[in-house]
Length: 130
Image (cartoon, rainbow, N blue to C red; front, side, top):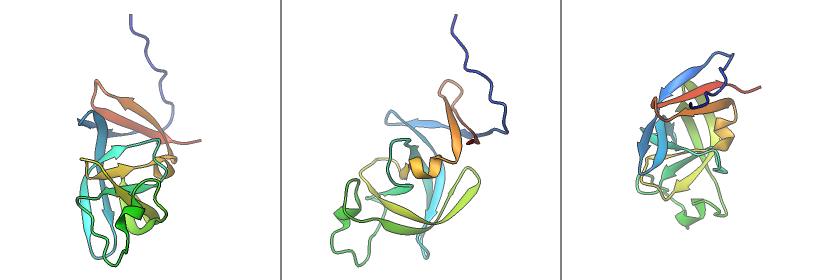
């Protein structure tokens, strides 16, 4: 028999979870002020930046070296807003990512929740951290 995970005793929000290219994605949206993008973002607990946008979808006007915004690059962009799991985040660090998804939601943003990936059920369960 398969062991079951313990029940979560806090208010839990569940989001549809999709697999794209072998990675877990969920819906999110980002905006830099005049432009907004909504789509499927990779859920990455190991990413060092709150949000990264696919370099194929983003534009970086005025940036001398946009590649510096990729992971391990020298700089970070500032995003006006991001929306994930019904929560609005404002003025957060961002960057670019070489990904087939629309972007990446990283650990600094995910840290507000305890996460449970229910792959058979196609859900991401989020409970408040702490």
